Figure 1: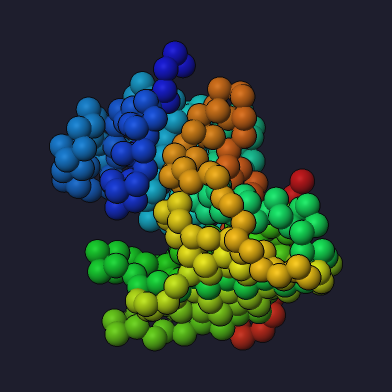
Figure 2: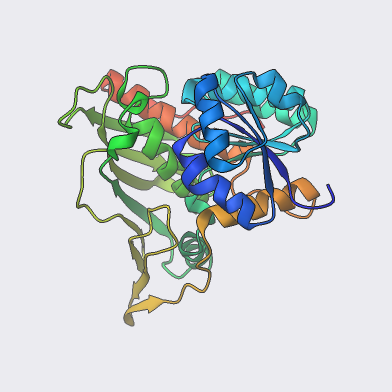
Length: 336
């Protein structure tokens, strides 16, 4: 690979158009092909974004002169497409959740590892400078022994996205769309997947939803660290926030649960409260794509590896099962 990665886009999606493809090109990477289940959609997307090859055939895309695929199709399609890409020896950047069953998610990781291709999950938040600063503070003992965390990640789902996310198809609903991102943040913060999850989900939007569009989740991490999340598609004016509390200090971080490199980090301890400088304000997708390319070149690791994406999915799937069954659910241990 003499220059930047040559990408094939699997899914002519909103996020590919608005966030990912523009960042690829800004980094000197190229978008060589796009695949959509709708030929008309693929053709339109290719014309709009100057992509040479448009196809409705995944096989044709995988046979093209590309190094990697970015998969942002509907959630239920992720696993099969990622496994096909691995079989074709293409590196894989996969939107969350990486599958809609734990068996399929595990198979994606296994197949990519067996094929020797890089697999990364496109969880944008753990790579943010704010989140890395928070993790550094916790790891350095700035708040002492961690006791709890709280995430507020309630937003209003844009009208243009009120399609399959509100349906009853596998992978729909707020838990596998937003709570899974929270799990990626909390897992990175506490060094691994949660052990147990209890969740409540509701349908509170003005639309007819086939799946829960708001949820609150309580999680238990190793060391009896507790966390809670509030996620919603229904809240237009709620600021996002992350808090982490320990036995000798607390971190509050307003505005950090977004797709943009914004928000602040505050540390409070016995000496008072002060703002912590965050030097890294790079675009979150620039971070993800730069670190993916470094992994492909063998000089780094993805911002969120495939196994970390699997762990985030396992937590979110347990939350979904809890919300549906009205009982606490243990997060199954993942294979080494």
